[in-house]
Length: 442
Image (cartoon, rainbow, N blue to C red; front, side, top):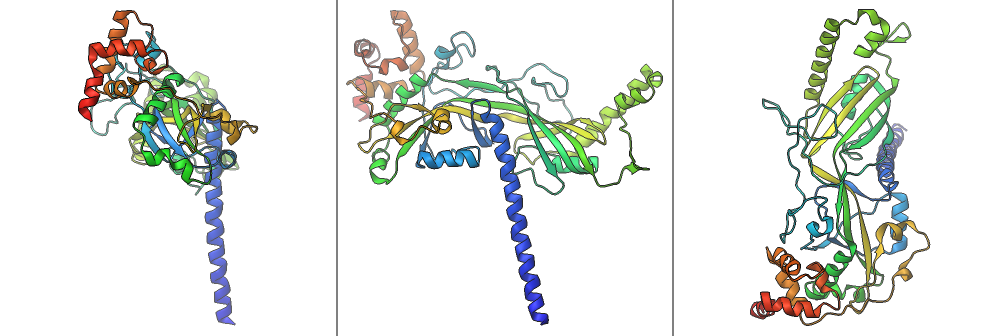
């Protein structure tokens, strides 16, 4: 009898452990989905987890049927980007943005992705870059990229003591904040600060995709559709959205009982609370003293929080009381939170279809594999492949761009791939001799 009881207790413990793990997994998945749904509300494809290494021109192989993708899209809130096969080069940001952004910085091929640069100092919690202060323990400051701004709605969540948030949201310090407020249950809000976006003309990317597919793609990749028993697609990123900072506010909804005196919560020791309690007592001297102590408190809390939970990031408190805290999570490098792109289908003969926007493909229930048109007849003249190889060499994109402007041609170097430009390519070959270079490389 005693042995049976021990066995039953052991089985019960195992069941509780399994059920507890499953419950925590579901809670984390729910938080991740809510986060992604906030990004989706802005008609943007969310990236989860956040990544630094995603940019326009990235090509991913998708082997999941559309119906299954739509199902994942509904259940998880995002579609993983897990099989990168190419990064299209030679994207001319200078031509795309004209005089609006990055003038002259991206004419070279290949080019570096947009890099942050130091900006003027700012107050804590602002959405612009701040310079790092010298001294021990100083954190590298957020940097600013001169790119078009983007804005996203705030996101609300609820978290309880013991529930891990590190796996669901890129936010440090939530467990620490729970202890600080002596809370077992908090309501939280997240805002993306200094969100930016940059992208590239989808037509140019489609052109470069077809040239890459016909010239550089491996034969086994072209034949993958014939080997698979389900449709295969290429997903191309045309625009990315990223952020430097996350601002988090947590408010206590339930406490443990400590910090409550006579059935009433201990009042917050903040400037606002002191002023409300006795406005006449708040002189300039007392205000300065209270503010100094408050700033020291925030610094002490931030130092205790430390960093390292998020690679390349840091967090600091910008507001704290017994009922609520505010934190700013900063990243040394911008992290991509979402993207826009298009999908093309790989047909069994190795050709590609016309593109369909990825967001539309997954959001519209009426779309399916049959929505992809028949293969595009990509017309490639004798100059296209040699020209493509030559254009990838560093400095040649700028040379071609300057030559086209000098000759008065209203076309970009990437636009020369389009049918009808054979005459211009022939004249360009007389200047740059890319046909001879192609032969010498064989």
